[in-house]
Image 1 (spheres, rainbow, N blue to C red):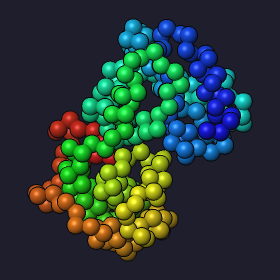
Image 2 (tube, one colour; image 1 turned 90 degrees about the vertical axis):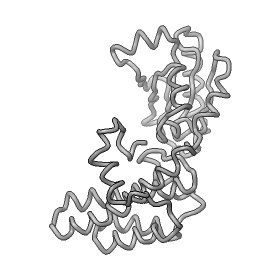
Image 3 (cartoon, rainbow, N blue to C red; image 1 turned 60 degrees about the horizontal axis):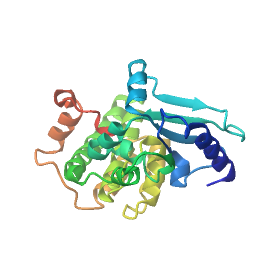
Image 4 (cartoon, rainbow, N blue to C red; image 1 turned 120 degrees about the vertical axis):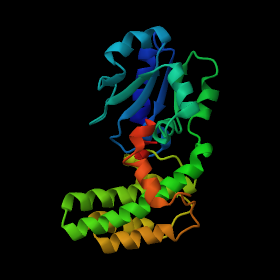
Length: 261
C-alpha cells in the first residue's frame, strides 16, 4: 500500500475505532486489490451495529464521504455503511459485483468475532449458478452480434454503439465465468479479463477495435473469436428463447438485470 493511502487508513481507524456505533472498518476497492494509482480514492466499508443501521436505514444514510483524512492531491474517502446481516447475505446469495467488492478486503479494526472467516466466504465464485450463467452469456453473445448487424443495416447509431458495448460485456462475462472469476462490475472488467488465464489470445484487441469503430464485420470477428474458444454450455431451449427470457421477460421472475448478477 502506498504511504499516503496507509496514512489515510490509519487516520480513519483512529477516528472510528472508539465509536461504539461502528464495531469494524474494512478497506476495499482498488487499494485492497493492488490496482490503485497515486490519486486513487480510499474505499471503506463501515460495519454498523444493528441499532445504528436501523437508525440510518429509513433515511438511506448508508454512505460516507470525506476529504478530511487525505493529504494527497485529489484524495477522498468513499464509504458504505452496512451491518452484519448484509455481509451474511452477500456470502449467501450476493451478486458477483457485490462479492467482488470484498476481494482482498483488509480489516482496519474489528470488535466482531468471526469477521475474518465471514469475509473469506464472500469473494467466492457462485459455482451453483455457473452452468446457467454460461448458457445465458452464450445466448447474449449470439443475440447481440446479430443486433449489431441490424443496427448497422438500419443506420441506428445508438443501437449500434449500445449493442456493441453489450456484446463486449457479455463476451467478457462468458470468459470470466469460464475462468471462475467474479465480474467486478464495468470499471474493472478489462482489468480482470487481462489477468484471466484462459481466453482467446486476440480477444482484448478485437474488443478495443469493436468499441472504437462498431460494425457488423468487427462484431462477427469478435463474437466468433469468443464463441470458437471453447465448447460452451448452450441453453437447452436455444439461445433465442434464453435471450428473450433473460431480457424482455426477466421482470416476470423478479430478477435483477443479467448484467448485474
